[in-house]
Image (cartoon, rainbow, N blue to C red; front, top):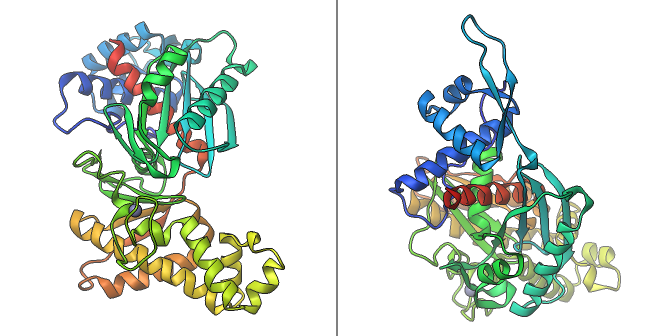
Length: 414
Ligand SMILES: [Zn+2]
């Protein structure tokens, strides 16, 4: 038996306010038990009670529910420490399948999982086009592709989870600028198409929770997760719970204005954080600054084709002494630091995880510029902010989505 579960479902019911009702408390406990069983593979009820902190009678009752749902089975007897031999519980991977889809990256990706949350197959394709129709078609095709994988066998599909950028309300994507959709009833569309429950979640909330549970935020009860990718978004965890605030804010923190004279943003405003520090914004800036300025290091690297200009190349140029590449990374870091100084001060959270390709590709130099700028922006030494890179990869993220989906299924199935 290992020490503790890798992933705890601390609050998978992302749309729900704190002060949960009994039903969601029950589903959280079911999910917590399930995650410990997944982690340990074979475990007794006594050890489950010890690890989860639930009472032995609650464990017995909840395990019975999981057995009825088919998610776990009894698999023989363990060693006795004197009394009766304890009955061992194991996950049942044959209970069904869950599909996770992610719309937050450069590519549309998806994975199919068995009921013990093991990734069976993964698919990743560039977005063919944006807008509701194109995204709907591509999503339906990719899900169908996953379902036809031989590894699925005859197991039935239990549910689908979709993680998306933008603002989610009442099971619709209210707006996701980078997908060019608004009032997009994705849950309803996929439920009609596949005849199983579908759950939508905000990409940054899933990422924040996943990082907290098995990534860079392990052991932290409070953290801010900042995603810098095609867009910019945040996931905030306060007291182990996702903080949603007023509906809409979660998907809009990337649109706080950091430069009133800045470029026009995808949202229509001028100078949003996203318009100056997202990947497309950085590449645009780089093209303007570096190419017009005839930077010899860059010029040599890209040759005749400006399309070769990407984030790893800018980083490499900075390392090779390009002043312009360095100042571009510094400028981006200053915008990010400014936004972080607001978020950390307002929420009182001194721990930040940055995910997405900008932090990954810019790497160490980016983080040191952020730290430098934060020191300038913050009050004094008592306000130390720790900023670290995200740890999780695509597959972990898909796994997080499928876990949330199973928890939501537990919430409605009983
Ligand atoms: Zn904006």
